[in-house]
Image 1 (spheres, rainbow, N blue to C red):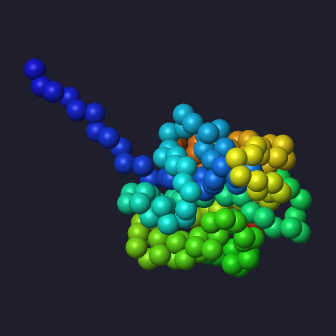
Image 2 (image 1 turned 30 degrees about the vertical axis):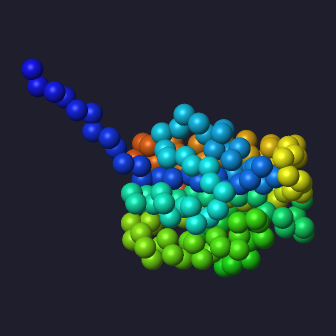
Image 3 (image 1 turned 180 degrees about the vertical axis):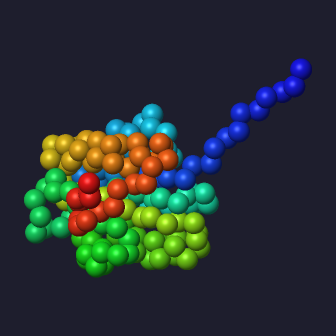
Length: 173
């Protein structure tokens, strides 16, 4: 009797939730929690440099992170495509932003198969250690998870081209 081995498929899409236990900074982690059970690689991380440990087979990276932009309302969602959109250079500060740009530059140089990078961010207002997320950010995390499931994960797992963004946060039909 011959042994049949199930081949393990290497992941090509990684959704990384950047975060901490500080109130709205849990946004990225909550998106990952909402996506549990999806057929893509999901990681909760605390520092952007940790991304580099998970990119060997990745062609499409999606990062979810909260920001502290004061000119936007809490819960406001934006999506950036690296590096085409000039707005990316002005992503509002987060507890991880000081090195996110540098990490992404290094990632694209080190991992030539990494073809797409999308960054989903939401404006937060509560950064108190060990506190809960604000209702607006929790709602935004659920919305982002739903958008990712419908517009990124499902096409990816069916082998279809992912939609292209026509501007921040909006998809081409």
